[in-house]
Length: 444
Ligand SMILES: *Cc1c(COP(=O)(O)O)cnc(C)c1O
Image (cartoon, rainbow, N blue to C red):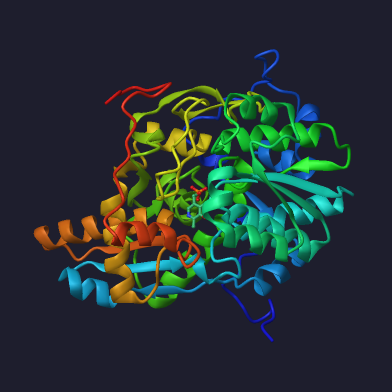
């Protein structure tokens, strides 16, 4: 049996980038008063410990031993592989490495924060965690965490995914979670959207509103979010802390870092422990954040205060946003559909520490298939955005004859996302891109 005593790569503490940011984060605002929100109010929505972590300016927070034991159980530390066949196929002098989060038990990085959130909630006597899920990875991760730690889990799943992705719904139920298609008739927000359209496909923004409304009428319940917030990104720092040590062991010095971005959590997980060196003036990297052209918050969004949900129940946070009314239609299979962006990542983009890139979904799936054929792993559609970014960087390195070391995060596998691959292979996939956005610097 693996034991934390002999796994030296498993981090002992999480890293929070807040004290190292080039400027302090603006505070979250109370949606009713537009004044900085009182922590007490946030504690009605989130577990108290997570609110403390959200606001903390500590650089490091110890990972409780019980959570480290669970990290072992769910597959941490995850491996780093070198994509040697892909390098040959591209004939690039670049050396390409990837951290593979698909090897956790739920097949993506989301379990890293799910177990931490469930652990702290359980310790506070909370009985139920309520959340939303889009494609279903987050709902699955929280469902496992709930069953491992003895909490009830209730999930609002966007109706389009609920119908198109039955396997994730089944998986959540296997772990004992309750799953409802959203909009549902269980909440006022849900009923409002159902009245407009009884077959409403739903969206992340609507599902978040439903989850929060549900939390507010159940004293023993709290809400749980799988991305965007500071504490979520901090829990994900285990990815980069492991990767740093693993790359050192291999004897490689990283030049370029790449990750895909929805809300920003897996990207932050890999890159922030490296960006720490940059912000402390110790080392420089090229860092690329890859998003979908269907939800281009970094490349077309506005940096402003906005709600996290369509029903305007969440605190307002300052971030790159497309507007809380924005939603990506279900014909888009490439994931990465959230309208907002982690506030810390928004600041790093503003300061040009991180360079954003956006791709269409067909070129992303083409890259994913090249990767699968050469490395054997089928990437999650979200992760495939990072793969596409890396391929372009490796081809650029070939043109310039540069022997760069590229490290990227393969945030999950795509074995439960084969519908998207099917539609690509049949030639039915289209490149969706919004022309008008509710909030935008650039309307196409
Ligand atoms: C949810 C998810 C993402 C996008 O979310 P982030 O918070 O930006 O990481 C990316 N990859 C996979 C596999 C996911 O499940």
